[in-house]
Length: 401
Image (tube, helix red, strand yellow):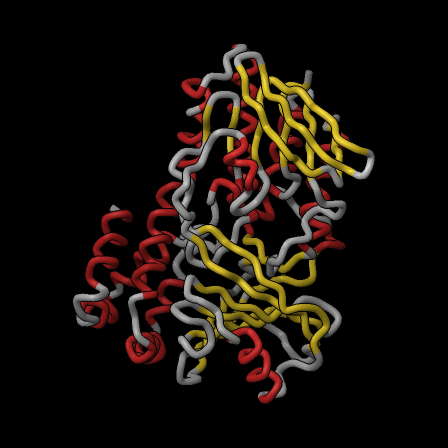
């Protein structure tokens, strides 16, 4: 019997396996994919994430210290820091390296095996898989679900509910972009309803073009690509576009008897940008620590495992709340209101005050959001946006204390 069966070998699952294997526990990792880390993602990680699990130099496309934000009416605002704030990495190689480290530490990986059933009993967890070689059963003292957004494994393990999970839809394509030097972010409902779009350089004249929204996407990805072509910003399409779901709110409960849920499967994603690699690492680490305690105590009850949820909430629970309400506030704005706020950024350099503060961090958005909304040159504009925005704004401030 394995100590822990991890279902899903993305950043959360692989980090859980790595930490548990380093502690000397017997870990089995199951994933239906053959290539790990192959998920639609820009591959942008902040400095703290890079410090937490440093990428190999060969996995880094380039450093990012600046970006240009484009308003609904096409006005451009360039922000820049003196030092790099993030890295753009090869996501497949980076996530795969976590799995490689886990294998080296002693974790067992079975790839190309799809989980078809999870049975939790008083004496352990049984996981059934189907693969080209047939069906198999695996036994563990407990299980960790790390199967990504809207994973059926959550319900198989007895968690989740019948209520639909709050989510966004993202769409991304890979294109030629020979002269692109920095990331560009585009605002406005015409580009991406109630959200934003991006153009991110990677390497060798390639770039990622994408958008994300909680609203229905109806040709927006194709229109955005065509707009960039007309501006001669991009060339031919290399791959995509492809779409995927991104949670914007955590599950109401991320633990149960003999089961924990991590990463995207638990809804542990930045609601502002949809980024999830760093939170996946942190939640995977928290899952491993909690599992280690349960194994040593031989107690896998939900009462024992609830410490996992306390762990991740103590690190970024408040960030999730601020980010969620900030997104709802932004979604309440019209393009004209966004343009008005954008004008204040341009005229008063309010954004520069926030970006240049010592505590600004790419990985933690809460403080930056509160500073922007409370900035002296913006506060009156924010307060004048009308009753539709007021409830969301109040929730942002309450979340921030």
